[in-house]
Structure formats: C-alpha cells, structure tokens
Image (cartoon, rainbow, N blue to C red; front, side, top):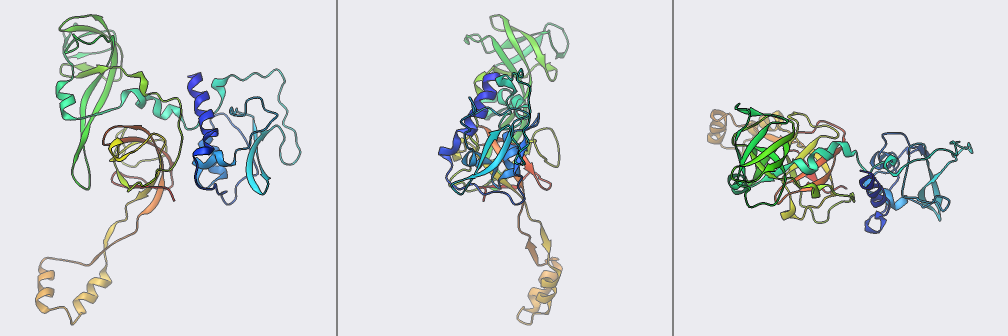
Length: 365
C-alpha cells in the first residue's frame, strides 16, 4: 500500500508533460491551503482550478523540500506567481507571514502522504469486478457442491470445483452471473456483470478440486463460477486527463443498487477498450434533458390554417402533442479506473445534481 500511495502522488505531480491545455484558476480560489487528513490531490486541485486534472501545470517544486512529490497533512500549499504564471508551492509559511510550526521530531512515512483520489472507494473493484461475455461464463470452472452438506457455503467451508485440473493456480475468486449490459442506443450486448462472492485457495488438486473458502461477501452455492485471482489489476499510478476524439457515451449501470448516483459511487459506462478508453480518463456527466409537452406549440398547431383538418383530427384521435427535449445539464465528473472490452468502470469524483443511469458522458470542456 505504501508503494501504491507514493506512486499515485508522484505520478500526478509529474504529469505536466502530458497536459495540453492551460490550467485556469477557479473564481474565488484560496491563496493557500493547509493539507488536512483525508484530503486528496483531486480535492485540493478543485479548490484552486476549474479543471482539477490540470493540477500539475501549476505545481512548482520547492528546492528546499527534499522530496517535493510527497504532500502530507499539515503542509501549506501557497498560490504564488512566477514570471506572471500562477504556481502552487509547498512551504511552512502562510501568506500573512505566519510560520506554521511543526515539531522537529515529527516523522512522516510515505504511506501517510495524501493520494490522488480516494482509493478506498475503488480498491474493492480493482480485483473483484469483472465483465464477461456469455462464452466465458458458460466455460468457466464451477462449484458442484460443498463439504457442509448444505446448499450454501461460507468462510472456512470447503467447496468442490470442476474445470481447474489443468491450471497451476492456487488462489481463486468466486462469482455469480449478474445483469446483462446492453447499449442503450444500439441495443448491442456489451457483456454480463460477474458479481463477486468471495475468495479461496486450493488445498487438493483433482476433478473436482477442493477449495477452502477464506473470505466471502455472500454465501456460495452450486453453479457459482470461479476464476484465478488477479492482483495485477491494482494499478500503481493514475494520470487524470481528458480523452481525445471521444464521441460520448452513457452511464448504463451503478454498483450498490442506488437509484440516484452521487459522489464516490462506482458506475459502468458503455465505452471500453474497443473505443480506446484508458484508465485515468476524466469525463463530464450530463443529466439527460427531459422531453416535455409544449402546450403552446400544440395549440398553435391546432390553430394553424396550413395544417389540414384531416391531420388535426388524426392527431387528436392519436392524442399526439408537440414535444420538446430540454438541454442536457452538467451534473458532475467521473474518472475511468478500470476498462474491459466494451465497458469501463468509473468513479464519480463530483456530483452537482442528481445523476442517473442513461445520463450522458462527454469530454470535459
């Protein structure tokens, strides 16, 4: 975890070479910020900038700091101007000249540095979340029974797993078939959610093999599927950035069974590696504008002498009314943190109004 945290902070602060647009200060921005426990670089950058992912563009390395890539609770981040350009630098002095004293004996380890985004929100999904196609589900190893003699198996029980006799793997994760993902525009099948149930390790090879369950979030049953546990999904770095040539997409699902999506919820969008989605892409979320009846336009059509009587009678019988779609309204921002072939998982970093499935995602302005 220490290496992960250090890498996240270092990556964001060294990202300025990848940024292409100038960072613009937010109206009413502070002159300084004292880093608090629980802060993230995203939180801090939002207080200074209109586009938080452009934070590295205004970061200025302080030569007096041995390791400028680490920011800790208690550090003072001050806004200064160098050659007419705004820069953020780390110091122990507030703009009014007050020196922020800290005990010389204070020692901070790397894992106390603040992170880019709230890692606790996404860590459970880096190894457990899966989106599979139907063939993968059909061909996956499966539980045929358990040693408990019951229909359900829990932690410390043993389950019997078929289909892994040729795999030199000891650790497995268990899943159950979840919702099918369909594209809301084209109706294309995008994959099926695999609901994470728990983890176990092989204690006896064979067909079936014997797996001891070491952790469950839900009891297992015959027919549940298993795949080798993949710890490689934990990424050491995140480069928040806007995608290029992104044609837009929609939120198609949300984890947790909530109806209204808010900050730090995990959502699924209908764009994946096939559409060149990458981890770290930041997208704006737009609440879909409602389609409403325009009563004035409907009355004007009824009064319009250029519309035939027959058309008016037909529209009256069919109860046809004039409608108008209201504009989409910006509702928040998300960041892609895991990609699959046709869909991606994203963390909602900001929510300024209610967000729902089928809301649109677009390149940030």
